[in-house]
Every structure is written in C-alpha cells, then in structure tokens.
Image (cartoon, one colour):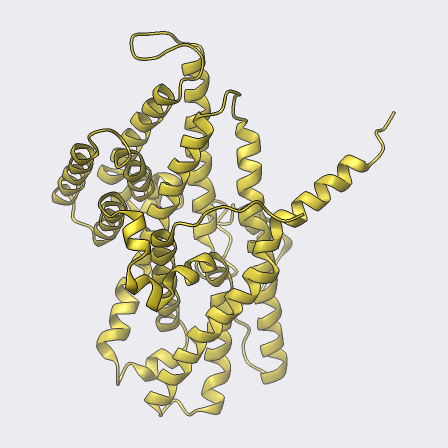
Length: 376
C-alpha cells in the first residue's frame, strides 16, 4: 500500500538541507587527518566549520519545533482524545528504526575498512549494554560512550517530542473537563492551543534564561527547549490574528534573552524562527535560490544524510590519506569534498531504501499481527 501524500514545505526543507551540509562539514573538520592537512590552504573556512558548524543543529531544533506545533494544531481539531502512548510509539519508530540500521551500517563499514586496510576502527560496539542504551536512546543518561558522533541529537529530539506531547495531552484533558470565561466545554481547539502555547512559552523562557546557560543540563530536553520552543511559537504566533504584533513580541523576547546572556546558538535559533515567522512560505518556496541550489531536495533526505554521513566521512579519513599524501593540502581538500558528496549520495540511498520504507514496513507487520488467530 502506498503512503498517503503529504505536502512538503520547501522553505523548511531548504533550511534542513543547508543545515545538513554544515553539520557534515563540521564533522569533516573535527575528525580525522584530512582537515589537519587542508587547514594550511583553507584556514578561515575550516576554522569556521570547526567553531560554528555545530550551531546548525539549532536550525533542526527550530524546524522540529515548528513542525511539532503544526502537528499539535491538527490534533487539536479532532473530537477524540489523543493517546500519549500512541504519539510516542509513532515518533520512536519513526526515529529509531532508521537510526539503529544506520548504526549497523556504520559498524559494518568500520569493520570492513579495518579488515581491508588494517586501520583502527572508527565505530564499534563494546558491549550489549552500550548497544541497548543506544536503541533505547539512553546512552547519554547512562554515561555510555557514543557509537558515532552526533547520535545524541536523536535522543534529544525524542525527549523534546515526548515533553511537548505530554504537555499537549495533559492540557487536552484539562480543557475537556473545564468550563470558564475563556475555555469552552469539551476540547475546544482554540482554548487548547492557547493553553499549550502558554506552557511552551514558559518552558522556552526557562530554557533560555536558565537551563541553556548551564552545560550540566545538555543531556536533557530542557537545555534545548529554548530553540524548540521558538520554533513552536513561530508557527503559532505567525498564524494568529494580528500576527505582526505577536511576531514583534517574539522578537522582543529573543532580544531580551540575548541581552541577558549573549549566545551565538540562540542567535541562530532566533534568526531561523523569525525567518519562519516573517517570510511567506509560498514566496520563499518559489524563490530562485531554493530551486537552483536544490536545498529543498536535500532537506527531504537530511535525516538519512545525518545518520550515515559520519561513518562515510571517517572511512574517507582512513583510506584517502593512503591514496593521496597528507603533504598535499589541496589533495586533502579534494578528499573532503568527495567525502561530503559521498555522504549525500549514501544518505539518498539510505532514504530511498530504508527511511522512506519504514511506514510501509510497520503497516505490513501490523497487518500480519492482526491476522494472527486470537489465543483462547
């Protein structure tokens, strides 16, 4: 059975595509000998990727929050109560099935490179505990070493989703059982979203003014809730009546947070949120720069590229210096460019044959389970 068609938002896909390339560039400069050699000919560019490339994650957080707000707005229109467990199950399978298969791909590629070229492995699993904590997205909480760089983001994404899904379901129960001057009986969509929006605003402010300023919280969703919340508020503020006043209020909150404690990651998150607020999605999606650079197409496969790029980049770092001497700085620049291209190609293959197939796999097994005879 074919998946139902869901319209894409080209601006969001373009932002994800651009952020994806920056993350790949950051990991290429942060790991391996190729960037050390290339630094002599491209010092400024590689230093920028090394120092600031990780901030592209803020774009993913804001976009994820924006899409989460859109999903909650749709759920608020339903007459029936939303199941928190079902929401988490769908999100977990959506994230973890490709994630686990990508980890297996990375470990296999590392083993193959180690066996063929007799070099040190770059991804390995030391114990079943380490593997199980990754599958359950608990490796950071349980202080297990990461199998690959960047996998912490998958756990944080799930935590943020679970936090907001929990807030929504609790607010839905409250609105359904409360009558008041601003809250009508049953589950009124406007009252429900207004209540959820208030909670998001409180949590986002708590993150921006406290949690995000203390690195000890960076293993939890609270540290990243500022960026995620900005994305959610960008969606809701820009679609309300008198949206300009709401957007100006959001900009004022951002300016105050930066005055209180300036952080470049908050600048990136705020700029992304305001772009989503102030630009017409239709106008930007039709703009020539999105079409010419194909960033929107890259954004569609950005999660797959994110999952598989690290082992591909590390494989290049192990093998390429054997083919091109490290003394050739421009030769290593060429190797880094090829690693980035191969990461995107591998991401497309992974998206085509794994990520895009996950819904069909789940539907197939769900139908098979339903067909099993009931036990008596």
